[in-house]
Image (cartoon, rainbow, N blue to C red; front, side, top):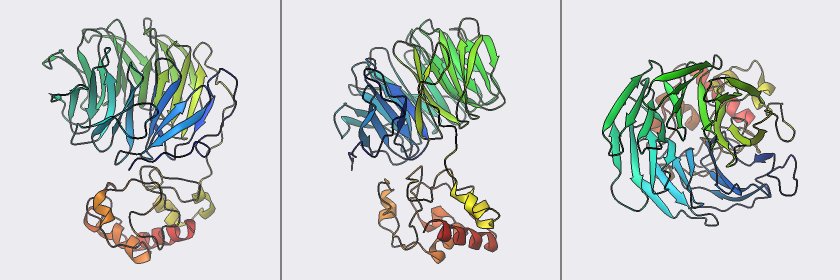
Length: 426
C-alpha cells in the first residue's frame, strides 16, 4: 500500500525566500540514505532508512508526497532526464515514479539482495543497479531481461555509467570493474580495500570513495591519477558536478570535501553537524550541493564558498538513553539505536519505532512497511516475548523478518534490555 501523507508534518523550514529553494528539508524518520534532483531543479527525491521516499518541491520547500513501497530501507535514488525518479531498496526492487503520482509507474524485481546504488544512462532508457547480492545489473526501462554483471567477490557498493557506454562498478572486494557496453568485463582495477561509491565525469574519468578515507581519481582506462587523503573515516557518498569539474565526498565522520577533479586539490571541507553523510547531489547548474545524513535532514550548501545556506542545527537530537545513564539495559540497547527509536516523535527508521511496543501486536506499528510473514504471526510484545526474541534470535522467533540476526546470550543482559525498553518506551 502506498500512502500519501500531508506535507504539514513532514517539513520544518529554516528559511523560505521567494524563488529560492528551502535551506533545510525535514521529514524523514531515519538517516537520508539517497538523494537526487530533477534536471529543472524544481523537484528532489530522497530515500531513507525509514523505508520511505519523499518527493520534495524545492522552490516551496514542501514535501509533495511520502511514498512507501519498498520492504526495507530506500538506499538509492536516481533522476531520469524526463522528470521521473527511480528508487532502489533493501528489498532488491527498483520502482519508477512519475511526479504527482502516489503509486509507482513500474516496479522491477531486480536483485536477490539489497540495492545500494543506481545510475541512469544519458538517454534515460537504461538503469544500472548495484547490489549486495554480488552483482550489478543493467535494466531497460522499455522492457526485456536485465543484463547481469558478475565478477565481484562480495557486495557491489557503487555503479556508474561512463560516457562511452561502459559501466563502472565498485565492490567491497577492493576492485573497480569496467564493463563494456555489451556486458563483457574489460578491466579490473585492484585497489586492495573496500570501495563504497563511484561516480563518472563527462570526460570518462572516474572517482572512487574508499574505506580508508581517500578519494581516488582515475582516468578512463582505470589508472589512478590522484589519491586525495580526506580523513581517517570511510567515504560513504560521492557526487560530481554536472560539468565534471568538482567532486564532493561525504564521510562517516560528517565532513564533506569539495575537490577539483583535474588537479586533485581540495577546495575546502564542509564541517556540518558531525553526523555521517550518506547522500550528495549537485544542483543542475553546479552552484549548490545538497547533502543528506544521519541527522535526517537535507541541507543545502554554496559550492563557491562552502557556506551553509540558512542556519545550521549543530545540536544532536536528544538521546533518550542519556536519561538512563549507567543503566545496563541502555548500554545493551546501543546496538539497536541505529534502527529503532524510543520516543513518540522519534518515528520509524530501518526498524519500526519502539514507542508503545509493550502490549502491541507484532507488525502493527503505524507507518511501517512490515514483511508479509510477520503479519501472520500471533505475537504480542511484552517482557517474555521480547526476551525470547533475543534469546533464540529473530530468524527463529519471527521467521521472515528483515531484522539482522542477533542474540543476547547473557540472561542478565537480556533482562536489563527488556527493562530498559519497558521504561523508555512508555
